[in-house]
Image (cartoon, rainbow, N blue to C red):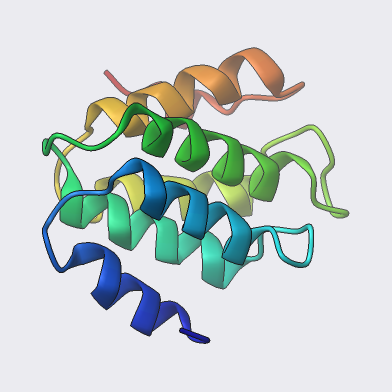
Amino acid sequence: MSTLNELKKSILADGVIDEAEVKQLREVLYADGVIDKEEAEFLFDLNNAVSGKNNHPSWQTLFTEAITSFLLDDEQSPGEIDEAEAQWLLEQIQGDGQLDETEKALLNNLKTKAKKFPSVLDLK
């Protein structure tokens, strides 16, 4: 399972993300210690596929931590969500036409941790 697509197929085979799959995701995504854009978009794809399902609670934790890290631990705007990041995040969240509980948890986490939180991300 070297590629993210293979991993995605495996994880989504039963339509939910369980605890073992979260552990596997964490190992693969953090293998190099950094969440990159491809991995962040992969996480949003997974979340859109399992939104509203009975996923293990650790899925929301991993998703929130990884996307927060991607946005706030970058070199261009450390600790802040710049305009480009805000636009990207908005596109990712609105991509499936709904704001689910996992995405709400992400936004709440970003709001508390970011030095700069754009008002465009104040979604209800």
